[in-house]
Image (cartoon, one colour):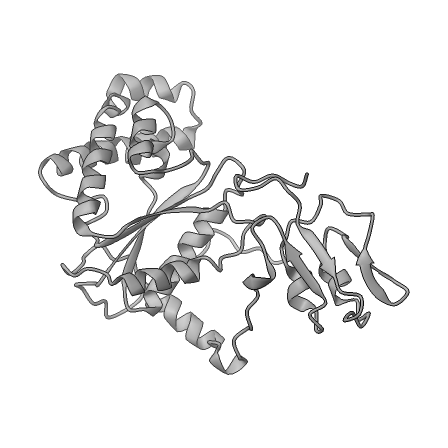
Length: 305
């Protein structure tokens, strides 16, 4: 048994073709589980592995002779592909220009997103780095304005059952058990947000996912690294920007669909497989507005050691 995920608990299988191996040792240098060692000038399996092969594929991808194959943990030699030529890669200035051009867009044209574009976004998001393969990121894709509206209406009904949390007595009680920062955030943002979303949805206004023609919810599993769905969502957002779409991250849905009977029923309706520590919604669409300038952002601190 290797490190478990929601998809597998088996270890990867490393196969080495001794005849092809030239003894370069590259596979040994990149394997951080110490599964491979050099013996008599050839790569062989060691007996010093730490966790068991997690099928990251590094050894298979770096071997210049194609002497190593990995199978198991959803991996196979068929997963290998040739890396793009450097001429096709974007330089720093191009990447920075793309990132600077992106802004959070909440105003969309009434225009659907082609399935080909949706698949391109997902293809890019699948390349996101993960804490441990195979990926435990799950994606719910809502690919029409009408489905988006239904999703938001159902979520609003869920929020309505939680409106008591925004009452003054509830807020006063919560302050006794929350940190100062959490209490301030709840009183100044969470409570007004619940009231706003419930009220606006009842009036036929979508101030949650803004009638976007495409919505993706990225979430993990009890096994996944909490960062994994957030990184994948970011990759999707950047990919969409490169395809000419406007995007916006919505963080206010995930926390409310994690606990309680009604939250479970909501997850079941939308085939959301797991509760998870972190998750993020991204909305996509053809922007109906055009920004003339960007705004410089800063970190809270940058300490050079």
